Image 1 (cartoon, rainbow, N blue to C red):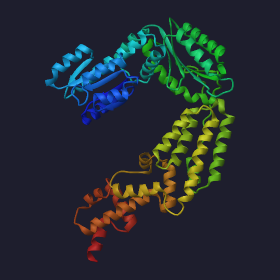
Image 2 (cartoon, rainbow, N blue to C red; image 1 turned 180 degrees about the vertical axis):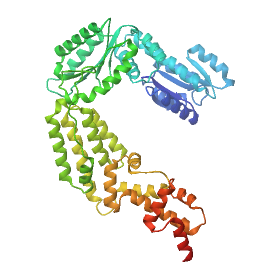
Image 3 (cartoon, one colour; image 1 turned 90 degrees about the horizontal axis):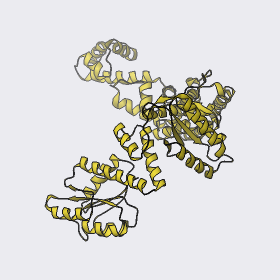
Length: 502
């Protein structure tokens, strides 16, 4: 990670630099800002810093004085200076004392970012040249991880691989394996995991630690037999060093060339939920997933009714029965369908709280045992019913939001399905909750609201009925006539005549 300091006596310049740099590269850490050279030197010269961007003309201590003093504290730091057209004499002095570039104000954003990119590559190369293995591998692993996640373009990727002297296989067979340790299990040792990392780094050029300290290894061989041999070797080494039962093993299909690795990583991500129906130590391979012969039965209406009627015991009984049935069919089940069902239940109970829903979904997706899944659901159910007890005397917040939205947007097309998507709540549950709290089906409520609006316009204006229908949210005139007569007993023209006579 590139560490950077910004020094300028113009706050707007500093704020602009911060915004541009953070948007450009999230790996860059801005360690601080200073209004002049003296402040920068006093507060930051003893902190690790790879790059200082500084104005030339500043009070108390200018940019050139800062560079000369700073180099006595950290001689590896690199500098970019900012200057105006009238300050070229300063720039020439800056070139003499060693700066990477000078940029004229107002800044050219493209030139700034290109310069930062070049400096970042120099810093990474310096780490490699000085033999700082830990720093080198942190930078390299980060680049590999970003590439697997499609956050680095192809040309940028090739340049980085050349920088790190990594092989770029074109015609060889390739596959990706993901080794996930079971942290906290009995017999687990951090020393063993570090020993394994060192061994695999020495054996496999394409190996990285992801942000969760899990291992990903890119295998390369002349044919699929060679890939199979390498997999067996990796498995044996893991078994010998930390124990195979301490890890999950995920393997992609075999492809061609290192360019295949990002696609292989997508496959591995799709395999994550297979951990729920697999034992640690087994190889979960993308091309050897057994057919899923069992899928959970799920009646949304039955569970939605229990939630609407505040039937906590019935809801807990449903959860127990769901997991009991799943356990009977665990190894023939489709874990993706299980997660889908539980996500639907979470959606019912989130009641338009996107942050809560996102947190729960992430926990469901990341679970590796049925017990973890059940505990996550229990942690959602208990607060849901506790919250419901406090809401008994008034309409729930989600229904209040729906009623307000209808009043403000009734002319737009809407349904329980579209409202459920907009407010992040299960449509079936929303329909039952709406009927219980409002007393009518949502469609009846919406049509009644629209017809009442049409009645007001009919009584107060001479607009054509077709225009009034559109302004009331109806695009189908036949449907408008049917709904109007259903709720008033009259056609629109008949209603207008009756009100005019009266």
